[in-house]
Length: 148
Image 1 (cartoon, one colour):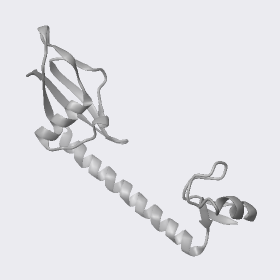
Image 2: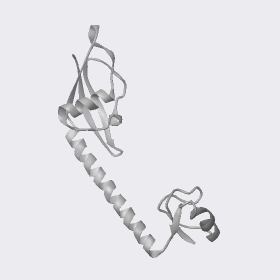
Image 3: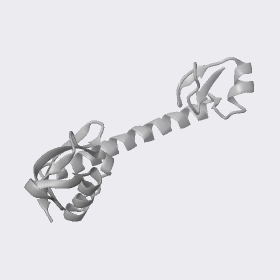
Image 4: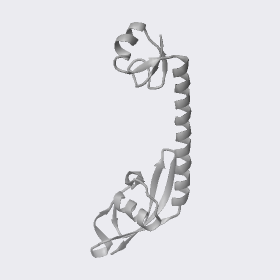
């Protein structure tokens, strides 16, 4: 019996796959747990429509990420913080502080987890960090750390 999986089923396939299973397996395991539906022509058309919509959504997300990356490239964000002798900071500049400064200064809201610091920023100065906006899109951002 051909079915379309609604969820990942170990040993059979992933969500959205069209697979062949025994009738009893479908009736006793797949159907009661709502893990799949019969592969009727209407369900197959619905699956194709859902896959097309998903592909369109991913393409739109990629396009938005590219636009945001183009806006962010070359921008400089200034972070003000307290420091001690010799320009050493009390603590470190975090992703959260950089994200907040980016939103305040340039109006671009990017999740703090997207900012990749190779090592913690613990002194005054200029730094270049990478912002991974999308798995295939990243931007270089300049961060200037100054005394408050």
